[in-house]
Image (cartoon, rainbow, N blue to C red):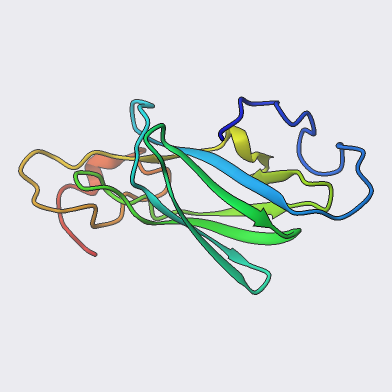
Length: 146
């Protein structure tokens, strides 16, 4: 389940006071540009010879469970119908103390955003929304590129 920011109390890697390496749950949210939950985003986490896939739930929460310590790349494989896929890739670090960060912040505070496609566009989650998914959206227009 998605936790509020600061729930883990570790402030990133190194502060939990745990000695033994352990797996972590990497949790974050998927929203539209207005911050509304966006269910049905398919996200991937890859690194350390592993590949994880998960979909955001009705609250926009997405989690990868049992992730071993190491460096990973978080990305979005697809957005739900009517939204443009956020094509950015984000560095994710899972530490041996069970903490995880995405882009340098606690993963439970991280949000992936997707821009809504213009009315009558005809794309179903295709095309790249660019980095951030919402910033400078006008430059992407409706053109379906993938």
